[in-house]
Length: 212
Image (cartoon, rainbow, N blue to C red; front, top):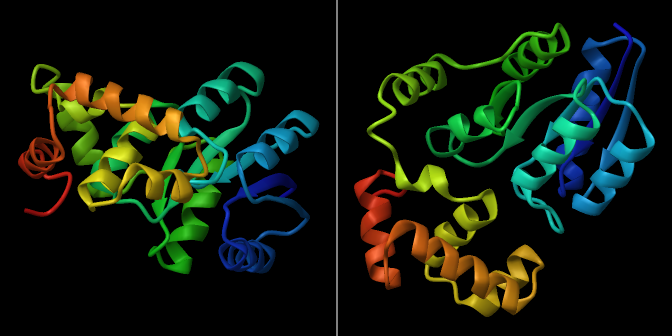
């Protein structure tokens, strides 16, 4: 199978493992790598990819904006999300943003290969659990989860705030300016109609975003 694939992940060991796995199961595949958002954009601008294995959280990257950019500039590029984030929190969000599949980094090698093959065949890869979540979200639009209205960056900051991280610590983790982090915090508080970290945590527990 001839294909041009981009591995976009900020962990060298993850990219090395996936490169090895693809090399063992796919012939004639050209693989490029990107370690942050800027590198990913530069690669996408310079090359046409059949598939991008994309992590949600990378330095200098806003996942939602990156997905929107690819829809406009590279609509033929299929995206398979490969992340450590939970499927029940991020799976439906990623599919709604245009991803063709969602995989957690805990997936077996067999599942990873199966997902890559399906997406390269222009099909979607959706686990049974994610399929159920997707059906529920479409069949019950009135039962809207307020967290679905957050951007990926806002969602990430909400999770870090719930973990007790300060804004300066969040800036270091996400590689963003303090003013940017503070703006995201203010917006997510407005969208969720909360006024403190405690009320944010209680809301996240109520919607099972985090364990109570």
